[in-house]
Image 1: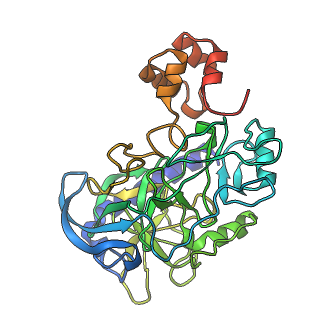
Image 2: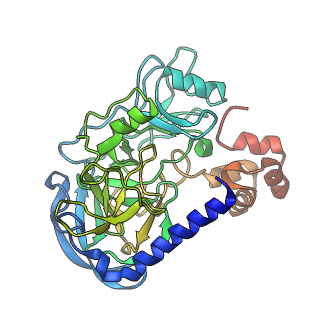
Length: 394
């Protein structure tokens, strides 16, 4: 796309967000499922009945939120498969972002393709390296990650009942908090890249997996996964979630509804903003409301949120992982497998300060950092740095 065209498109999107902000309360007319209430989440997922409570938004405003305390997994939701046992088996799915990027079924063909790129996930007998991220760590440079559930875990989620537009959209990075499904399953942005960690936190064929804390969550809009498989020529099928491209999937953490890629009447929305949302009807005879639509390729979740989220909107009693007392505010655990690179361990290996290492990596380009420049800044050899970092065997 020519630069002038990109600039016009960026300007148009900014104008759209400004217009939405200026409309204020006029754009928040209530449709049947437009805004969350105490009964928006399926009873099969709830520990206690949903309720409306006072809350504080991140901009400091007082507000009301729907409060849901949900289980580690809804009673009627089956999950898996995740990691295949051998290269003869079929596991879940993975969105590979290296050479030959795309959505793949985790099977022998895919794993052999990664092996050719320096990421070896199996041994000479074709047995796939894997580990349970809740109870153990990896023993190989590259392993498939799956997690066991903890039936004692519960999570508390706050969703504003009357959404407020933010001054600017909030970008959703890796494993950022996106929202909650109508089924009561939390929704998070992209899982960590193999390029960052060396390990693969496998998703099942409906687009979810188990957090290091022992609870299941979505990394996709599961109600239209089969359409994505058809679009992207992937030999997979989501059989555990009913498929409907017009259905409401859940609520974003800013309170706006999240729907499939099609309008309620089956038409294709053609006026979506940079976050994948627009003002439109969500039911016949209703009032136009702002809502998000999922994408037609993977990952299919919104890339940003236009509204203001509530403070402390996600917490859990899990021993670790996202939202726990011992875990990070976001990410796949306290660092290391499945999350951000474990700078503490890497720094200890190199004999340097962890904060200095993190800053050097960021300054040199993050994921695509110039490792020679990083090594020079840290005063270590390039070979030592490459050996300490996760990634393909060198």
